[in-house]
Length: 331
View 1: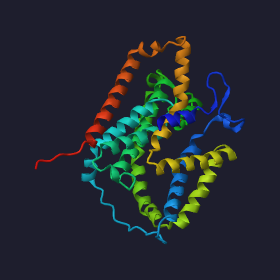
View 2: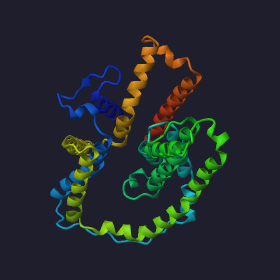
View 3: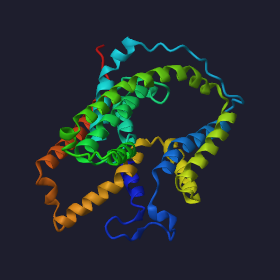
View 4: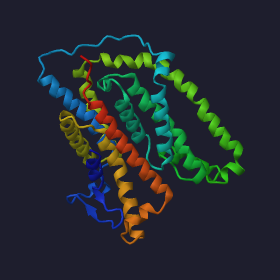
């Protein structure tokens, strides 16, 4: 699925030579598959198609409205998820340091990690506390991580920090190594504001939660048309192009087929996001080394990441084998 996402990411202009690839003569496709239409199609439209397919082959004429239960999540439950919250926060922080990645990749990475470590992975996707906590912890941790390259190197980590970087430049502050030396008060003011902003976020979240939770009581026949209209408008508003709308519908149909077949969608999305920078960095490195792959093994930092990647893959395979091994009990 990750390779499928990488293949989808090569649609558009070649990053080195600038020639169009797999555009089928469409000028609008030279920009490649935009993230927002694909994201909306894979997760929103595919869910609509999936629910319509289920309702068509179901004998139930009316959807059952779930009962609203009071929230019982307390400190004990948070302490139970402490390992998940820690790992998700670390993933969000370290991935947020990488420029241009955004919050989507660490959210799905932390969700997949929490699901693989859970004793009840079948509850994920049905309101499991760990699933919600994992992706939200990673999503919140990205903000702090993205500020590291922005303040220290002047490289924005995502769209939000790019706006912050522009605001710095307007105020005469030049982000970089000397920012901490020359404007220490302003930098620490940013840190304090980032910490204090968590308080109103929690308060507004708790207040709005009591109202937002009632969305689950909406009948599907009323909800699905609204979702479809918002998806169409959202895909069109990215570039004001009907091509993005067709991309969104196509991604929704592909996502529907993949979900029906049991394939996970997050690796595809991660591959789509990281495909372009992966190809560009790979080809630039090979051009620098005249086609020699030895350039990837000369740096100690690169070797460290290669070893970590191999260990993660081996650990994942070993964990999966142990998890699938049938349990034998004494007679």
